[in-house]
Amino acid sequence: QVHLVESGGGLVQAGDSLRISCAASGSTVRTYAMAWFRQAPGKEREFVASISESGQRFYYADSVKGRFAITRDNAKNTVYLQMNNLKPEATARYHCTAENTYGGSSRYDGHYTSWGQGTQVTVSS
Image (cartoon, rainbow, N blue to C red; front, top):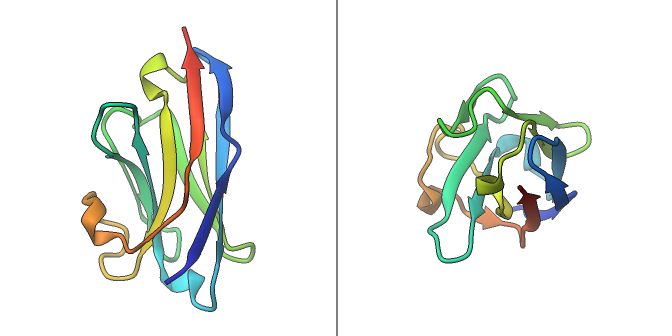
C-alpha cells in the first residue's frame, strides 16, 4: 500500500481553474495506477479520473472530460488533477487513491486499495 496526501483545494468561482495534488509515499509508488474520486455532501463517491502506472493511459468521467486533466510525475511521486472551467456542481471533497491490479481502467472505488484524506474544492456560482 501507499500513503497518500492531497493538497491544493480551496474556494474558487465558477469558470476558474484549480490544480490539486496528491503526494504518494512508499517504495513501489510507480507500480500503482492512481485516480481521483470526489464526494459531495449527501451524495455517493464518484469517479473523476484515473491514470495508469506509466502515465500513458488515462480515463475520465463524462462530466469532466475536456475540462479536467490528470497527470503524474513519477520522479516526484505526485499525481495532479488540473481542473478548468469549474462548475458549482464540482464542489466536493476530492480523494486521491491507488491500485495495482487494473492499470487505472477501473471506475469502481472498491478496486482501489489506498486512500488519502481528501482536499475540499468549493466552487461558488
